[in-house]
Image (tube, rainbow, N blue to C red; front, side, top):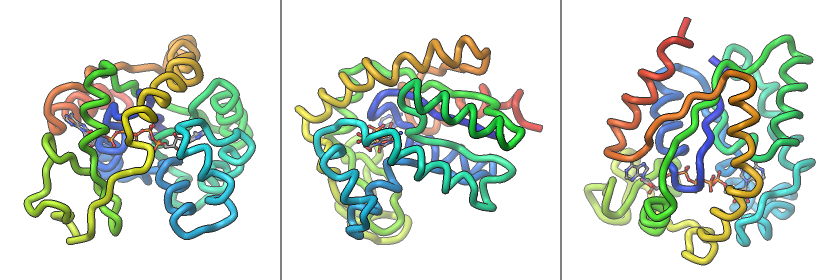
Length: 217
Ligand code: AP5
């Protein structure tokens, strides 16, 4: 399956991506994770992306698209993938459509996670991420057994720099202006599915898997 997850910051894309990609045995490709890993290792790509990410702005399309194109060409993405955080504006979506058409394929489905802004702020202000395996936690809604440590691998948990309230509000504005138009774009293509992304994580996963069932071969 070739699947895109779309939704505002904090909708739970990364959380659901880890479970859905594992259920479907397809690689999870998160542009935010790839950028963060490059920032932390100080690569040229990381240096290009860092200032935009700290402000909560989108990294320029030419940088992002080149990175995604290279990742989608990898062997493990040839029979399916889950994209988390890409595309994020209409030019990125048009480029992805053309790229896949050049490879004689196309997206099967775009899954929209629907959540209100106030819930997003609650979720992001308590988010913690494992420095070692990338697993996402929340201090109240999905707490690890030992505060500050990942249950899965024991790694240290950290708070993202862009999870300060002012930056969260700016990211929500960027989402409304630049990413929200993708909802109509993919609805016109007939491949948009929306689910309520509130409630416990496992319930959202169950809703997502039920919605995706008809696309499984
Ligand atoms: P990115 O990392 O993609 O950030 P985002 O889209 O803002 O999304 P988040 O990762 O903040 O939220 P999420 O929806 O994944 O929520 P999560 O599962 O963590 O991008 C970061 C930056 O990189 C961008 O600002 C931009 O600069 C750059 N970038 C990335 N892609 C780009 C692109 N295509 N073009 C240009 N620039 C790009 O959940 C959040 C919290 O809620 C967690 O603590 C979780 O435990 C909790 N939670 C999840 N589900 C539930 C639930 N059901 N109930 C209660 N709590 C829950």
